[in-house]
Structures are given as C-alpha cells and as structure tokens.
Length: 332
Image 1 (cartoon, rainbow, N blue to C red):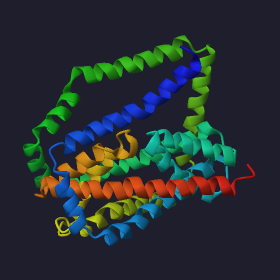
Image 2 (image 1 turned 60 degrees about the vertical axis):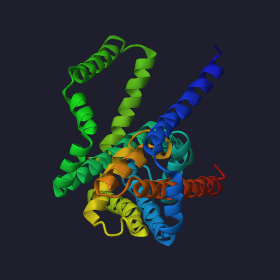
Image 3 (image 1 turned 180 degrees about the horizontal axis):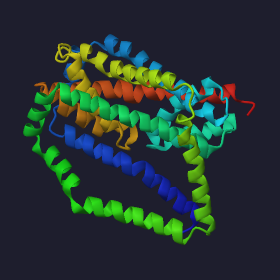
C-alpha cells in the first residue's frame, strides 16, 4: 500500500470511527424514543428566545479562554496578538466538529504560523489549559455530588450498570497491569534506544512541551488566570443552565439540579466524538430522567439544546473565526 493511500485511510478512520461510535450511542439512547413526540414538544413547549439568550455566555467564555491562553504564553517570552489567540480558540471548536481532538492541534498550528511561536511550546501551554479545565470539571462533579448525595444514590440504584462498570475498572488487576506495562515499555524505549534519531526528536519535543507546562510556575498573573478560569466555567454553566428556563418541564429545577446536569454533560464532552454527539445526549437525558422528567421530554431537551448550541452555533462562530483569521493575517 502506497504511503499517500495509507495516510488517507488513517485520516478517514480517525474521522469516521469516532463519529460512528457517537452515532451508535445516539441510536442506543433514542432507539425507543418516539421522535414524533419530541418534535411536538419542540413545536409547542420550547421558548427559543431563551435558548438564543444563552448563546452569548458560551461565546464570552471562549473569548476569555483565548485571553487566558495568552497568560500561559507570556512567561515563555512571546507577545502574541490576543485577537489571534481568541479567534484560534473559537476556530478550534469548529475543527473538532469534523476531526475530534484535532482542533487543539490546529489551534497551535495556526498560532505558530501567524505568531511564530514554536508549536511544541504552544502545545505545552495547551496541556496546562486542558489540565486546568479537567480539574474544574472534577471539582464541579464533586461539589454536585456532595450537595446532592440523595440524587446520586437514587441514580445508581436505578442504573446499577454504571456503578458496576466503574467498580470493575477500578478494582480490575488488568487496569493496573496495563498501567505498569505501559510505563515499563516507555522506560525501555527511552533508556535502551536513547541515541536513536527518533527518540532524540521525541525527547526534544517533550522538553519543549514541558517548558510550556512550566509556564504556569513562572506566571506572574496567577490570580488573573484563576479569575479567567472562574469566568470561563461560570459562562459555560450559564450557557447550559439558562436553557432550563426554555422548557416547562425543567424551568422549576434549581441551580443545584442544573449543576449536576452540567457536570455530567461536561464529563461527556471529554469523550473524543465529533460535537459530543451521543455521549452528551446520554449524560443529559439520564440526569434529567433522574429528576423525574419523562424520557421524551428529556430527549427533547437534549436534542434541541445540543443541536442549537453544540452544532449550529459553534459551527457558525468557528467558521466566522477561521475566515476572520485568514483575512486579518492575509499578509502572512
């Protein structure tokens, strides 16, 4: 098989396997749902003006994310244009709609092109960016759990399969053997083949990535970083929670309930599927049904909010951002 054909096949697999996985989950979630009933709910029981009102909060959160990224880059000795960083962040989400998780690579690549910052150093700052978000998501889930222990207890009683899967993974000897084996293989490769060209290149790349990660320890504006992180996730929460008021069956749910659903949806977003299609729906529907909402109504909420926020709105904003990037940097 020639190299170009092999490369094309790999790219096709990287694109369509995650999408197929997401669509499979989507089908499993909605296979017993009457879509006629969902369409009826969407026609008669949704205030689309409220959903539209939620959209700027998601946009503002991502603009703040671009500014926060600049705080991580500055300690490396570079002064990029903030509008380029913001537009790269916005475009990142559109790329992820087509190629899951490649949006982050594209974000660093396009910033390297326009700002002449080494890719590996940018990628290191991106790891810090994502690490901060991972910590926040887990804190949200923990806080939601503590504040709503009764809900989670009832949820796992109603859905024991989720608890069983988590328990088996956490207690399986194969989980820990796999981790040990992975570490051992990496150590052997880097120790036994350290003089080979490819290992030297990988070591050099990791050193640059590590320098990007260390940027947070050299950051003088840590409080600003903290405020930006808080602003990002407050924006994301309002982006999601405001939609509760657009439906009669969720408008009376409190912010604590919204925090649970938001935390579950945020965990689902971490699964590398285009637009989180499938996992996002499964997480939100299961959570809303735990509040006593019917499967049809929960499905209508998830289908409507995801389609407008996670697909249409992100696609439009990202496309505009990518076009604007190319226009304002046309000399490069």
